Structure formats: structure tokens, C-alpha cells
Amino acid sequence: MSNIQQYADYTNSSDLFLDTAIDDKGALSSLAEEMNYRLALTLNQLVSTVADSLNGIDSSVNQQLAVGTYLTASNLRTIAQQLESVNVRPFEDNTYAGVINPLVVHDLYNDASFNGLTDINKMVSLAA
Image (cartoon, rainbow, N blue to C red; front, side, top):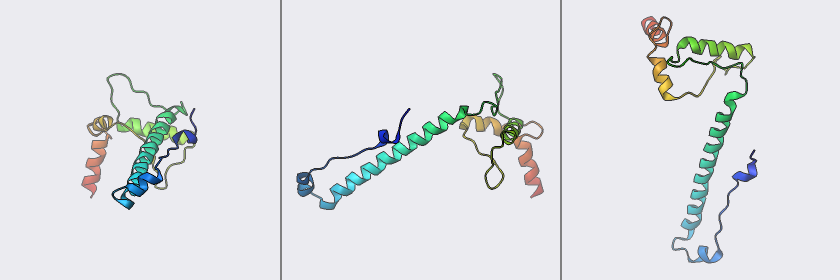
């Protein structure tokens, strides 16, 4: 388990370095820019770690797919119903969000079954 102190970072710069730097204000701004970059990397790692660790919180909300099958709109509807059954609050626009691999999205868009995502998009475009 980690704590927030493990993500602290610092830099050392002596008075001699700051006094003899060719670009007076550039030295401090360069150090600040590097620290900002390292902060962005740390935040990115924290978000990624939290997202990866939260996938097993509630095993009742899990859509297992058999080997050789692909994600369909029906699977997404099942997942939404599972989330509702355990009282997960949706976003303000009454939708849920998830993180999935782009290759899985490709499979989802290529689902040509009845009431699949492609079929639903055809109906929406005809209605417009």
C-alpha cells in the first residue's frame, strides 16, 4: 500500500547555481517546468493505478464473455442493468461511463446484430 508522501518530489539548487546561471530567471523557470512535468506523470500514474485497481470492487457487476465472442450492445445493456441493480448512481445525463480498450470498441461498432450499435445508429440517422 502506498501513501501520498511517496509521491512527493523536490529539487536542489544552490545559491551559486542561481547566481552564476547564464539566464537568471530561466534557471528557476526550467526547474519549475521540470517539476510540473513530473507532477503530471505522477498524477497520470495515480489515475491509472486507481482505475486498474477498482475493476474488482463489486464482483456482481461483471460481464464475462466467452472465448471467441465480442462485446455487443446487448452486453452493455446488461452491464447498465447490473449497475442499476446495485444502486450505482449514473451521471447527470442518466448515463454510465467505462474505460475499455479501443480494440473492443472496434468490435462493438462492427456488431451488426438486431438492436446492435450499428442498427441503432442507422435508426437514429433515419429519424434525423
